[in-house]
Amino acid sequence: MAGRRAASAGAAGGRASAGESIVTLFGRARRLAGDLLLLAVLDARYSARRAIEIVCVVVVTSVLLVTAWLALVVAASGWLLGAGVSWPMVLMVAAGLNVVAALAAAAWLRRRLDELPFAATLRQLRGEPAEGETL
Image (cartoon, rainbow, N blue to C red; front, side, top):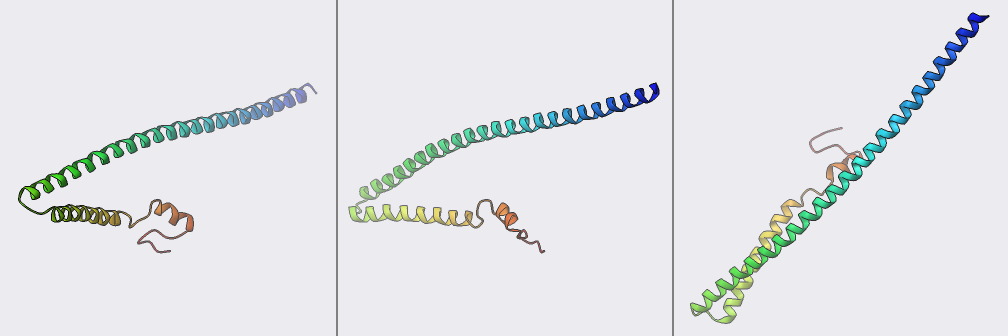
């Protein structure tokens, strides 16, 4: 009888330690999930700050480039006026320079927009094969 009690107590202790192991495992998994979530939040904050910095630099650079372009157009206009070209012709040349620059920018942008953002993700969500891949 005493042997049975010891055996059942040992078995109960084994079950308790297995139960404790499962609880410990779930606790660790929960902490790991929390740590991963915290990492994702911190990474998202960092990425958002970096994106804001990049946008600010792009805006400042764009303003500087537009100012430089306008200075070049004004310089070319002044040179043409000094060469005896009439005001209407100078304005037409300046407008033509701006149109050529706009067309060049539009052509560059059109080449960049051939593939939409997140195209691979959208294909994956729709279940479509990748380019050059067959089902």
